[in-house]
Length: 276
Image (cartoon, rainbow, N blue to C red; front, side, top):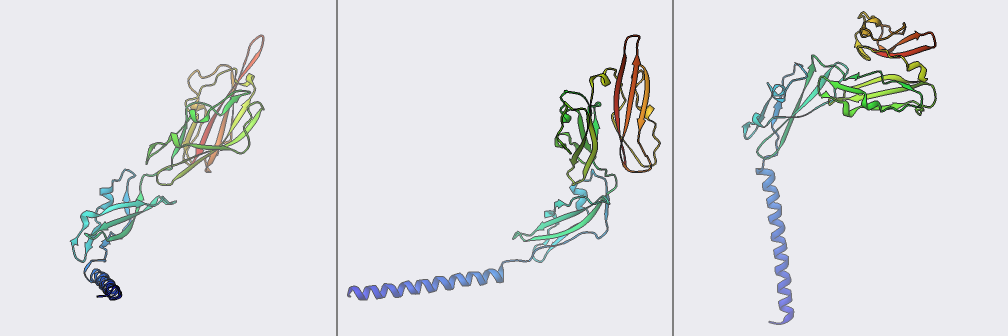
């Protein structure tokens, strides 16, 4: 047999092999479509809104949810909570469920959960850090804390910004906003000011029981309730703009004057009141 004949024969064999391989591949694809299950499980969840505490567990969220597969039957044991949506203004979140069959087809469903005891995160202040002596220094984060009924301590996630550059060498008030977000997407903001005062205004100490309080609309409020026993010396004056009939952030400024035969000394403290 000549070299040309051998070459033609090899070419024919290559074409035959290619055709057979292509037919085998197409056959496998058709087999997959006909035999392998591509249908996801059907996940069903109760239509009613789930009323729950913020301490609800995934097991509680899964109660009453079922998953049924057309081949494997009940696959409810594969159900998990995939995620929860951000919380809305009515304290509702969407629960997203998924379940798998033996071929890893994913079935989905969702349900609404309403938190019965949810509250937005709250700030706390350890002392009156928002009144600063001129030319003084301050690290706001060292004095402000934040917590949530959902997550507990969130202090390390506090962010803040000033409307303008803070200059502690210049007397005045500097608008300041604090932010904190919990794991449900609930955002709390605290609009306040940092006050730079002269050294003379902080000579006398005024000690308060608290420096940041939350009250509800309509609650009674008495600024004298927040002064510690023997919390100051001298004559006390209070300047308060708190309106318990309207939501907002308010200030109560406490001023004390202590006069001696030789001089007059002053002191100042501030209570921030959030009416919600």
